[in-house]
Amino acid sequence: MKSLKHLLVVVAGLVVGMTAQARTFEEIKASGKIIVATEGAYPPFNFFQGSKLTGFEVELAEAMVKKMGLALEWKALSFDALLAGLRQDRWDMVIASFGITEERAKAVTFTNPHYCSGGVIVSRDGSIRTPDMLAGKTVAVQTGSTYMENVKKLPNIKEVKNFPQDTDARAALMNGRVDAWVSDRFVVKNAIESNPNAPLKQGGYLFVEKVATAVKKGNSSLAAAVDKALAEVMADGTYKTLSEKYMKEDIRCQ
Ligand code: ARG
Image (cartoon, rainbow, N blue to C red; front, side):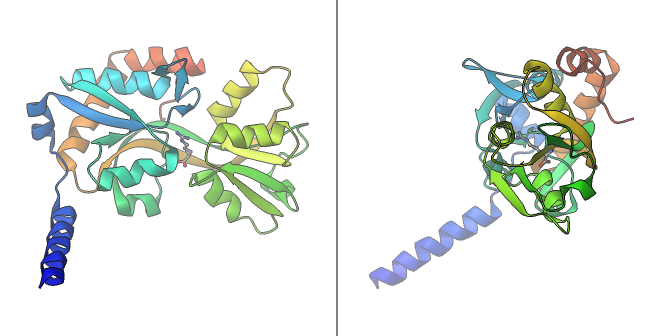
């Protein structure tokens, strides 16, 4: 009897969990505040300056949320926890340089892209420039990233080394534990500019991608509100100012 009750409670809990609805834009508006998650370890897009979360995506989200007439509460978590948290309604939106992929689009709803970029190959001395040249090499990538997926697809890689944080993948290259690092073109550009004497030389692209914010799968009212706010900051000069502040160029998709 006791165990049957127990079972019923567990089943009821599961049903509630499965049918829990994401907050619609109207519900978020009524509460006055949107909860947005990011990583905070991916300069120049999202990172901590001391205890302050900042970066292109952080400032862009703040500008967009202002257009939406909302306050913003940030959550900073590890990269691989971000999309799963949408499914569990732990936050309303994720902005953390997620490239739009078919696989991810099965699990979340992407908004319009806020930038276009791609994964580039980096080595210490610049000798590895093309995907072919990665044959027989050990390559560092961030766990769960599109860099990991695309490197794994290459036929003759010696080893793919995964790191929970992209900055650790970069460090592995710099201290000689791997032959190459694959990361975002603007992340790499930023790393080279902020460490001009570091052994980091950029080669060519491995792939290109469109990067977007994500909301819970099917939350179309929120996705539409985010798209509208993005179009507004792109039209009024805010986007350009922020993009030039962090990347020295306008990185919107052309
Ligand atoms: N653009 C890549 C991807 O979609 C990497 C994103 C990494 N983002 C981050 N906040 N570390 O997987």
